Amino acid sequence: MAPRHPSTRPRRLPLLLLAVVLLLPALVACGEASSPTASSGGGGGTTPTTASGSPGAGGDKGVIRIYSSWPLTGSSQKLGQDMVDSVKLAIEDRNGTVAGYTIEYVPLDDATAAQGTWDAGKEAENANKVVADPDAMVYIGTYNSGAAKISIPILNVAKMAMISPANTYPGLTKAAEGVVEANEPDVYYPNGVRNYCRVCPTDELQGAVAANWAKELGAQKVYVLDDTQLYGHGIAVVFANTAREIGLEVLGGPEGIDYKAPDYRALMTKIKSLDPDLIYFGGLTDTNAGKLVQDMRAVGMTDVMFMGPDGIFNDDFIKAAGPAAEGVYATFGGLPGSELTGKGADWYRKFKEKYGHEPDAYAAYAYEAASVALAAIEKAGVKDREKIREALVNTKDFDGLLGTWSFTETCDTTLTKMSGSQVKDGKWTFVKALEAGV
Image (cartoon, rainbow, N blue to C red; front, side):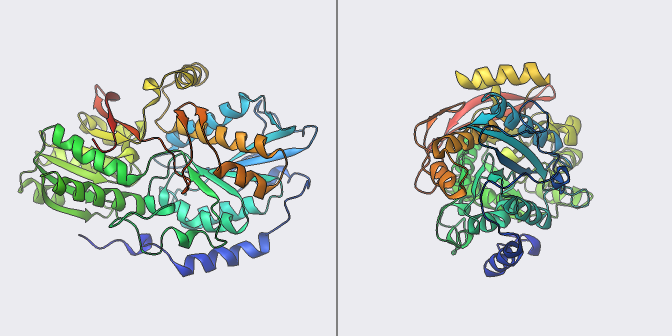
């Protein structure tokens, strides 16, 4: 296994000290204070808006502000914007008011042009910005699990509810032997109370599902790569371990790549000499998945299968890889919008009608996360961070786009249905539903 990049190693006490130091000047009471000025939308955000898109004027009981934080810059821009639009839809579906409060929404960008993906400093800035806003009650985010490690402790000290549509690294909420660090997840909750939940299944489930699907597709020999980030490395480890358990030959890895490298032809030439049936990449579109596939094809591995997790299951990957994307497989911790039924099918139709394109995979999960947050505000009935946090973590039998589900004691979803898709004719095409453990 290649060493993990120093910048992506799990942070322990220094992270918490940094979080508290950054937080202390910003801590304010959660009363009915007036809204910040329009300029407070800085740091990647915009002027707060209601569901109608006009500046929020306040309801009978005032304003509650919801923020989100995920990449809106770089190769995940479309994915991020689709998630933002879905949060707006969820607020619109409640006519922009909950429990007598006008709901304002501010999307923040935690990516930078220089980094090309999420940035730790930007995520910390976002979290502290939100904590400092007395009208802020819920933080929807993040997309990247590594970013969540930064913001969870900051928000935890402030007792603010945080809900993610997309984080899948297990260690954020629970222990998973061989996958998470010994101090996880407790290190992220300095006040000892959980404030963070997520609506998507975790990587110890998805990585195992992917390995079983690879075997079903006919793979016997696999090579495993990862981007050295928290999410990518974790899911690659699960894939490799499961592959061995079910009788696949793991030719190498998980081997970390430099995701900023200009090309990977030497790496792919080495892998080609081992004659794999499938290359698995634990990583993201943001961490050069498209270039990996291009160089795999360029060295002559035209018949070798390539599979990745939900981090590449987006239109931006197809754009990055170009024609080389054809035939690539990806798993996803749920069902794509086109396969949802009931309320999910209604949302999918409404999204396409309103925005004129196919929603990226996590758009439905952003809507679900926002809907859970709004339901928690409704249940709490008051603008109080602690009461809203308590209502959120105790969500049970939620009837949403994804079906009826609950949060477990660790604040993970009870849903385990996943799916497999393949790029066909230049677009992601649903192949089959995949169940955890199968």
